[in-house]
Image 1 (cartoon, rainbow, N blue to C red):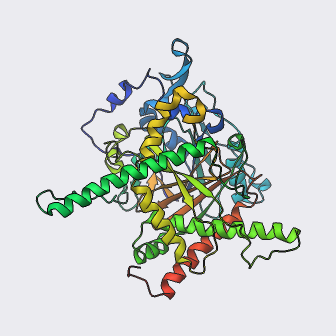
Image 2 (image 1 turned 90 degrees about the vertical axis):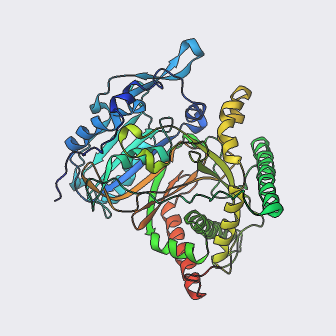
Amino acid sequence: MRRTRALKPIQTTKNVENILSCTEVGQPLSPMARKFHEPESNVYIIIVIGFQTQINPEVVKANLVDTFLKQPRFSCLQVADEKNGGQLKWVRTEVDLDNHVKVPSPDLNQVESADMYVEDYVSNLSRTKISMSIPMWDLHLLNIRTSKAESVGILRVHHSIGDGVSLMSLFLSCSRKVSDPDALPTLPASKKQKPCSTSSGGFLQHFIRLFSVLLIYWNTLVDVVMFLITILFLDDTKTPLKGPSGVGSTPRRIVHRIVSLDDVKLVKNAMNATINDVMVGVTQAALSRYLNRKYAGKNKKGGGGAAGNNNLPKNIRLRATSFVNLRPYLGNEDTAETMRSISDVKLGNLIGYVLFPFTIALREDALDYVRSAKATGKRKKATLEAIYTYFMAKTFKFFGTKWGSFPTQTTLWFSNVPGPQEEITCFGHQVAYVAPTCYGQPNALMIHVVSYANKINIILSVDEGIVPDPHQLCDDLEESLRLIKDAVIYKGLVDCNV
């Protein structure tokens, strides 16, 4: 068994003590953080981490003191400020790790399936909330061997503390490469657009630049109008995936499926797309398969329908609330830069979202799903919709929660967060997989995609009353990726552009 050891900090010129005197303490929660406390969107992030060794709880606790507890939000209460209308604010407190680190000891003789035990344990967490009398996070360490790991850690954090990108930065700042125990992990490099030259090009280049700016503003206007129409009355089609009002307070079943990152990259390179384009395409294909099967079952009860036929209703409107990291747009440091040390990580919710339409249809050519996702993704990149929804939380708070809340009219939440490119250890424990997701969102389905080394993990968080068979949906996602990859190979598109 690999020995665990305390985390060796990366040297930095910043004084770690500076973080303890952060000016955020005593300040009210940001408008976006307050949104995650609303009744219909009281959202928690759950990160399930599989390890290749048994967990040493004492080593973990010792490292938490020098990592998580150096972050003000992990050592602050969220207290109602009576002088400011009951608005929540950050208040420093002493942290008792025994209130946050849980180490259950299940009777392994009574456990029929370790995988189901962990799945049920996570599901039961979604039935509970963390008391506001302590900082709103906890960590559960399960030394139980599953089919994918020797042990499992479950970090639960209220979304008001930080978004997925900032928590990923914190997690990676606590991690080191397996190949180099003193080196931080590396994240995939984000592509940066090259600035246009102003010294050449003449009238045509200026015209193209002006047209691009006008297109962005036009797209933003269209998206804002569509957003307002959605909030007022435009609901998604009532499909077997669409949850009713109040679904945000229901328990969740959380499952995940690991697929090959190399397969995704093969499709990405062949179609000159992005990882996100491919995964959205795979998701569109999987949801189409899943819904077609559901409608086939309904039609059979009425005397018709077969699983091999097209049973989908026409013109299904199915949209995702798709989250966007705004740090590159709002001038914040790159994620890779903020992982240099614990004190460099800035927690918070610098995220916006867009209403992303999914194409639900059975395609003869599986690559059409990726083409559709690529076209929609390109269109959504040429808009300021995500920035608008971020600032809307602050601007519209005076007009009632309906205008500042997350939309309940969409069918699902979708999020994609890049993970480390190589295998890592966390507090000396080698990581087998990382599976982040949420519960408390006002949709019956959330799909989260995260990369780790040469794998991609697809995580589903579902209301079992609406989606009773999440493992079947995982099968559809895996099968859809296989069909799309096979189509690329069959058409000879490998290393070519479509």
